[in-house]
Amino acid sequence: MSDQSPHPTDTPSDPTAAFEEHPELAAPTAEHPPAPEAVQPPPPPPYAQQPPAYLPVPMTPMAPNDERTTGMAAHGVALAATVFSGGTLGFVCALVMYLVFRDRGPFVRHHTANALNVQILAGIGFIVGIIFCLTIIGLVIGIPLILAAGLYAVIVHIIGAIKANNGEWWTPPLTPQFVK
Image (cartoon, rainbow, N blue to C red):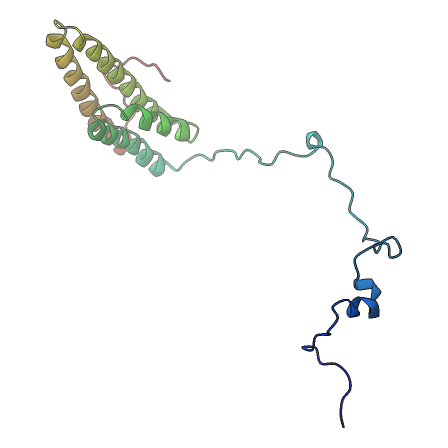
């Protein structure tokens, strides 16, 4: 009862012996051409004929409660960024809120635009104050102007957040409408 077939773990002493027994395993040569390959699919059409990789998603309007919350957040985020960054990042936060939420409803657009307008005005006040501070006589005018611009932004954002939370349409006083 001896089995004469080789065991799979047995290795032949000559590594080319397996190729001599099974020529299809050998590398393609002139006498053994490669096997015909499977049928390849046709190449994709040129890029100009393909649809775009993304499709724009239409913005859905927000519910009134969500609009109030987002309007309050627009003022709150700009206020927090103004306070924690010394007035430098409030504009960036207000701009991002405006660009993200401007198409979500008229109420949220109104309040995000107001927050951005307040930040633009405060930014102008900061820049003019810094320019005045660069001159010797300007320290008397520049520092109070920077403080007034920062205080104005803080107060108006607090009032704007409260008005937005109450669902009131409100335009900040003394603020030009740079963005509508």
